[in-house]
Image 1 (tube, rainbow, N blue to C red):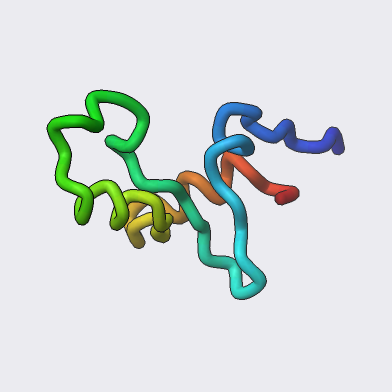
Image 2 (image 1 turned 45 degrees about the horizontal axis):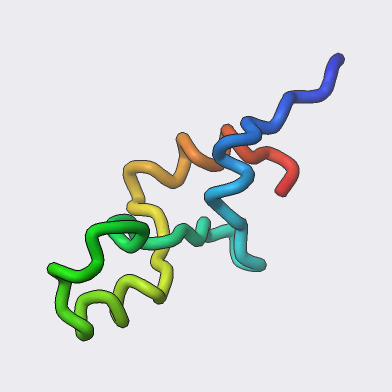
Length: 65
């Protein structure tokens, strides 16, 4: 049986935690930052976790991470 291939785009964006949750970065923090408040930009620095609906799909894309 051949190994599954890791989706390289997803591998650069997501990491698995020790308990199996999937970490992700927040969107909207790359450009057009002058119109966003400092508070909003500070909150966007911190990551989050994928939603329950997306976790299974993303886990398939990164089977070995």
